[in-house]
Image (tube, rainbow, N blue to C red; front, side, top):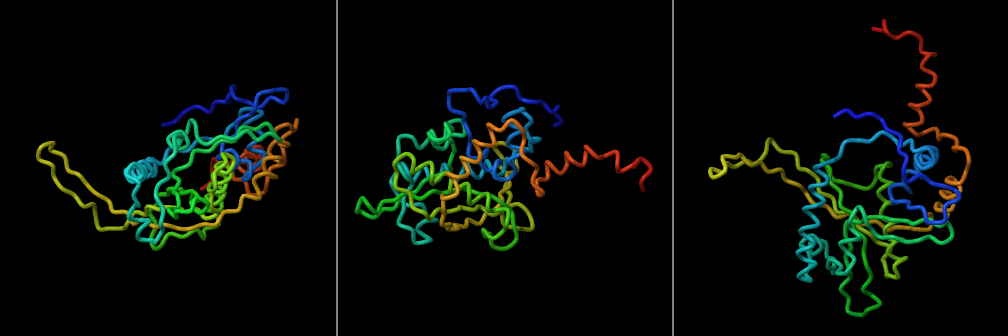
Length: 272
C-alpha cells in the first residue's frame, strides 16, 4: 500500500538536551552503513523510505521462541542443541521477556556519550557445566530464508548480522553477565519442493498447506572492540552542525544525488 513520505518531528537529537539520547542496535548499524543518512534521520527527521515487513521471517521467529520457551520453562535442552553436541539450555532470567521485546530490549546508558543503547535479542542460552565460572551465556539470533544449498555466513552483506550479535554481547556484558565470545545463528531455511504438503480439514472446510524448513546452527565468534569507538564517532556525528559527506556505496544517497542532477539526463519521455 502506498503512503506519503513524512518527515518526523519527534525524537530528534538536541545538542543542549540533558536527558540521554536513545540509540537502538539497528540505528548503530545505520550509522556504520551511512553516517549521512543517520545524521539526516536524527537531526532533520528525514528517514530512509520504509520497506514492507517480512512476515514469514516474523512467524519463524515467533515459532522458534515458543519452542525454546517450552524448554526454558522445563530446564531442558532443545533437540537442535543436542544434535550439535551443545550442553546448553535456554537461559532463565526475570528480564528475558523484556530483553526480547522490541519496545524494551536490553538497555545500557553509555556514560561517556550520554547515549542510551538498546537492543532486542532473540534468545540466550546458558552452558550447563556445574562450576559457576563456566556457566557462560551464549547469544543466539534467529534467521529465516529460502536458499538453495547450505546456509553460510560468507556473504559480504552478512557482516551486519555479525555486528548485530556483537552489540547484544556487549549489552549483556554491561548488565554484569558473563557472555561467551561464541554466538550462534539459528537459521530456518525453506526447503524447495514440488508443492505444499496439504490436507483437507472437513470440520472447517479449509485446505491446510505445510512448507518444510531445514534448521541450521551456525557458530560465530564475536569481537566487540569496535563498539566503543563507534559510539564516540556516532555522538560526534550527532552533535555536528552539518551532515557528513555521503559514502560512495550508500544506495539511498546515490539515489538522492541522481535526483538532484536529473536535468542532466535530458528528456527521457521519448526513450525507447
